[in-house]
Image (tube, rainbow over all chains, first blue to last red; front, side, top):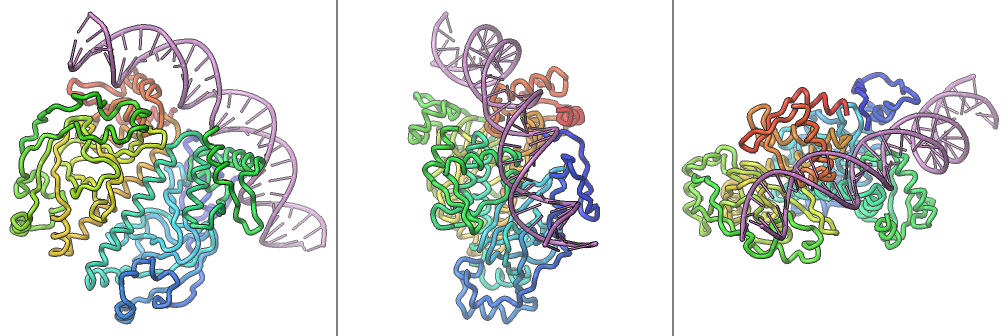
Length: 272
Length: 272
DNA sequence: CGAGAGGTTGACTTGCGTCAATGAACGTGG
DNA sequence: CCACGTTCATTGACGCAAGTCAACCTCTCG
């Protein structure tokens, strides 16, 4: 693999894309919106009427308790929109906030020493980003929107207060950690499981889950992101997806989603 | 405490040690679930004088508090010895206990549909196994000793009680989860990073950390385990290690450990 | 002693990465 | 509006890293 001692100037400047160079892909993150491209503020969040209240960190609280918490805090919980490609936060930073995804899809990435981007985890609606800040650690990843995202920024002060007043809240937090860990374990299994074809097929199934879409519908990532998740080349991804389309196992829809034939997909993977 | 690796019975029957043929176990997962590799009971644990007290879950408690907790509980905290290859617990089971490793090395594994074993995580001294039981979930992995292990079995009732009485205890738990997750992230990065040579070299460095051994000394796993961690073949592992030995970058010692030349190792990986 | 496990090594095969060329989709500015 | 640059997907040709298959060795243990 890239055994070249490529050195990439991380962050800042450089906006120059070196065309044709293999390093190009390594410098991918330059293509993402920088932190300076502000997300759109969509107002203070109305937690009491949140559409996903029942599945977020606050789901344990009664309306009354939640109201009390919200009244009592100094810092507001704000909502933001991020367009696809926007950076929500960056690895190593120490902003005093975590985020709950109300809608959309987010990738958590880290970078190899050579600058190549690696997708460590995908986060979906109702997932919580940046919990490590609660333990005083800097963000462990860079969070980038893969699809347009709506997220609530929750100052960690709110959570600390909550933890003090309702120790039971910690259980919720633990469940978050545990879920992330189980997802990571699944991810590891997927990464380790066989041929490139099999991994792509597994990823498709996994995306369908993540999306909790209706059966047989996946939101497809672009080839580069798939490649970054599975540690394969975009070319391989393209070849495989092309073949799946040719065999009518995967059918693009007009809305950017794909329909897929789960059974045929499985057979395809096994035949590989 | 008496950490001498007492060995008992084990694998007297036809049931293979844990590293047996995958297919067989896949067909009959029930077979190797039988706990024929009985651990040796080494008595009720003397937590107050634990040699790793400062780095375990209880490290926050004063001696007095710890004493009170221990007095108050119904179920005892027991210590056990496991020989290399012994199963500590199995995926899917719901025993009401977690384990703290006092000494040794443990692999957490899951099995592919085809029965192949995959190492998801390595756990070392002072790590905690089976925390998922606290959340009411079955064990998420099978835990197998890689080296002779001494571990304390802590009934989850003890932890629940502790959580009730000392909410601050939850923070410790969260840190455990977080650490496991960060380790998983590192693991993912390692798995995804380049050629087989590079991965093996990285694993060696990582094992050295895990072992927090003196510089330039690693405890080497057997080829199959390395292969199972990196998703490569034992043959490849053997070839690479052989070359490293030939180049004198890796030197076997008499005590089962290896000395290694960190700088040369790095160069070797880059040259790959 | 023989059986079984694991490690080592060689010869052969192949999956997939690399390199390169082309096309489609999109935005931007003249 | 079209021309151009950019990005991504697609496809082919080629070569190599690493998997497969197989033989043989060493150790341990019953």
